[in-house]
Image 1 (cartoon, rainbow, N blue to C red):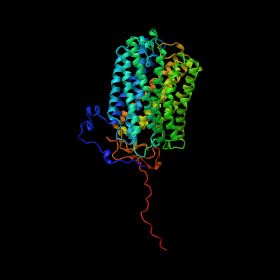
Image 2: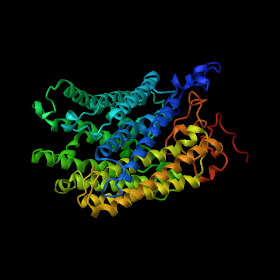
Image 3: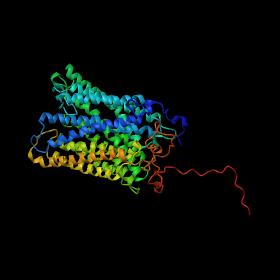
Image 4: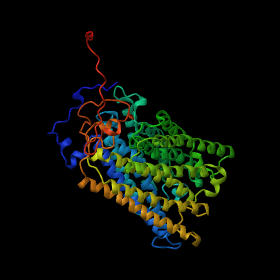
Length: 566
C-alpha cells in the first residue's frame, strides 16, 4: 500500500520568505528546517571532536616517555578530563542521534519535518549553551576530576565542579528533548503503508536510543544536581565527612552512563544495518531479529550498570547477578553482527567508502565486545579493573564502534546532504589509515593493561615505554587518517561532481527525493514500499546513479476479450 497525501502537503515555501530561503545568518539561526538543524549539529559535534582529538594527541605525546615531557601531573589530569568530557558529552552522545538523526529521520518517514520543530531548534540551542557553559567552566581554572566526576574527590577538590556539572545538566535537557521528539515523530508521522516492520532499521535504532535518552538522562541530571548540592550545602549525600556514601554516587552515575553507552553505539548499529544492505545490494538478513535486538539492548542496558563497580564493595550475590546480566546483554549485539555478515553472503558487495567503514566497524566492534567478556567475568575483572585494558576496551566500542559507524554514515549520506559526490579513492585511503592507526593505538593498550599498567597515570615504569610509544605512533596515524577524511569532504564541497538522487541504489525513502532534498523533503508524496527491496544491477547508470523506478503492475483488462476467429 502506497502512502497517500495531497501535493499541497509537500508544496514548497514562498521564495520571498527571507528566514527560509535566505542564505544569511538569521535564516540558519532561526530555521525550523530539521535538515539545517541537523547540519548545525554536525558542525558543532565535529568541532567538539576536533578539540577532543587534539587533546588526545597531547596525552599520547606526554606518554612517549616515563618521565615528564611537557605536562605536570596536575596539567595531565586536567587534559584527560577535558578530553573525556568533551568526547563523551559533546561528541559521542549527540553525534548520530542529534546530527544524522535530525537530518534523516523525517526523510526516512516521508515526512516534512519532526513532530516538534521549535523544540528541535530549542534542543540545539540547549546543546550550544551547555557546551559553552561546560567548556568555559572547565577551562577557567581547570578541572581534574575525570569525566565521571567521582566522589569523594569531586566534593573536595577546588576545581569548578558545580559550574561544570550545571553544563552537563543543560546538555541533558537537550538530549531528553531530542529523544522525545524522535519518539513522537516515529509514532505519529509514519505514512500510510509504513507499519513498524516496514521501517528502515536506522529508525528502529533511533527509536531505541530515544527511549534510553528519555528514561536514563533524568537520572544523570538528578545526580549532578545532588553533587552540586553536596558541594554547596554539605548535606551529606556522597561525602563521607558528613556521613555520605561515595559508592551511592557511582550507582547513580552508572545507572545512567551504562545505558548511555548504548545511546552512543545503538545509532551506529542502525547506520551499519543500512550500509550493509545497500552496499551488498541485498535485503537485510533477519530484519525482525535486528529490529527486536535494538529494543532488547535498550532494555538490558538498564540492568547491567553494576559491572562497573565489581571492586567497589558489593555483596557476592549481587556481583554474580550483574555478571550474568552483562553476559546476557551481549546476545542481541551478537545477533546484529551475525545478521550483518549473513547479509553480505551471496550479495553484490561493492567495496566503496561507506562499505569499507562498515567492515571496519564490524571488526573493531567485535574486538570491543569480546574483550568486554573479560571485564564482565568476576575473576578477570578484578586484576584488569582501572588498567589500560579498560581504556582499550572502551575505545574499541566507543571509537571503533560509534566513530567509525558515524564516519560510514557521513560518507553514505553525504551526497544526499550536500548534493556533491566525494573522491572514492581518498575516502578509502582515509578508512585504511584510520583502521591501521586505531589498531596500532589500542591493541598495545590491551597488553599494557594485562601487565598491570594503571590508567590515568602520567608516569609509569620504564618496562612499559615501548608499548606506550607504539600506541602514540598509532594515535598520530589515526589523527592523520581523520584529517584525510576531513579533507575528502571539504574537497567534495568545493569541487565534487553533482550527486544523483540515488547514487548507491538505496530503497529507503530518503533516496526518492533530490540531492540535497527540497525544503519539505519531497516534491511529491513518496511511495512507501519494502525498504530493502532492491532493483537488479543492470539498472545502474554511472551518471544518474540508480533509476529507482519500480515496474508497474500488469494492467487488468476492462472488457471481455474478443473470441478468436477460427
